[in-house]
Length: 364
Ligand SMILES: NC(=O)c1ccc[n+]([C@@H]2O[C@H](COP(=O)([O-])OP(=O)(O)OC[C@H]3O[C@@H](n4cnc5c(N)ncnc54)[C@H](O)[C@@H]3O)[C@@H](O)[C@H]2O)c1
Image 1 (cartoon, helix red, strand yellow):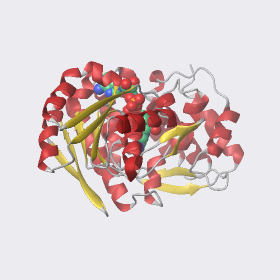
Image 2 (spheres, rainbow, N blue to C red):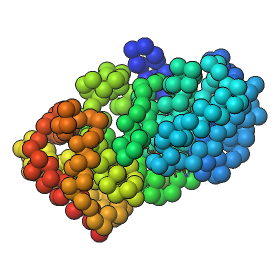
Image 3 (tube, rainbow, N blue to C red):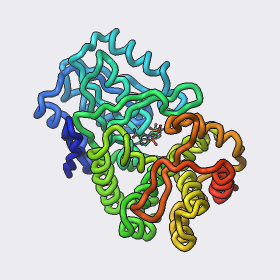
């Protein structure tokens, strides 16, 4: 099991990565003397598929142990679900000395993190990631959140866990569609990190999509280390951390406009494509590099199913996006791999072009 340290100024915490690392969870918890009142928020599908792992935890953990079975999905990443979690905590007499363990993907992690950060003004939190997307992105960095109305992740907090545990064995039951969602975020890192990682991905994308253990563990480690470095320098997204939003302003709007039929990671692949078009459109990204960079997200072309879209709606949803200041949309755009430009305001017509050109690449 590998241990990667995330050094946020006020809190250093480890990310443990390894096959079957879940078996180490009770030992890790007792070694640090975390609270013994354990409230597990677990994705229902994960509970069904990995029942014995969670039962094993129950045998080895906590004087009080309660499992909240959470039906995932963006629609349930909501205030209504948060209320149900608070109620279960109160009815089962959990108080400030609670350890919440989130077991699931990014949706479970985000909502459980939000509950952990607000219940009695903050209880202990451990993230156990069971999707590729959560492993490479959402479980690290402390962003929690829920959707409200039509706006994704508009309510949330920054709240760091005690530790994160990534057990690659969970990924073996992940449906292809969900693996691809993780791949979407991984493509983002290809543009944020360095040319050698971009080349590695360009060469090994098929292996990644086929669940090759070695390729996946190399990628998880690279992404966790990179994200860890970024959030260490800027925990609350006042500057550098914004680079992690590359492609996301488009992606969030596409998800909402497609009524969540396009999943987050798939939308990120499309959003990255739109961001590449926009970067080229405003003269930031040279034509030759643009063509080369485009190869990577377009490898997911057949894995994303969009049959029609409404650019007007997408644009309006983007204006509502919380990253906008005074209704102006500010983009993260790309000059070259590893060189991002933040807070770029772009005239409306160019944004419309980028929406059209980017999404059309994926149209069926
Ligand atoms: N907090 C952050 O920094 C951050 C970063 C990126 C994304 N996100 C959020 O992450 C969310 C998406 O996360 P996700 O893609 O992990 O989605 P998810 O949590 O919905 O999981 C995807 C699906 O996989 C199932 N599942 C989970 N683990 C499984 C397993 N091991 N085997 C089989 N099925 C399994 C779930 O039941 C669900 O149906 C979005 O809401 C996004 O906003 C947050």
